[in-house]
Length: 105
Image (cartoon, rainbow, N blue to C red; front, top):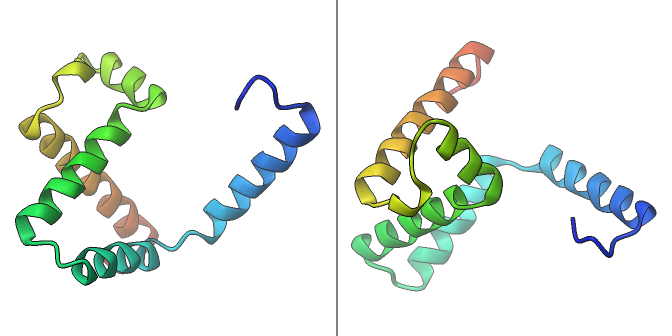
């Protein structure tokens, strides 16, 4: 949170973030992204580049940067191979979580 946010504002922001997260539907988000890319006429290679860039940029957020450093991955060396390997591991982790909860994959 920005340092110029008071306690009340911070509390309201956190409540809204929790509400947003609780209402997040991964399928709806995926559909919106997919439709946006298709509607704008992106080619498969352009879509791959966009998705790679999004993942790479998310991995560079402070909390993820610290995670990467903790597992001895230099965040400044996130090339396509490293990002896609991390993505594979995260997808497997996500799917395992769905399987454990009995949710459909």
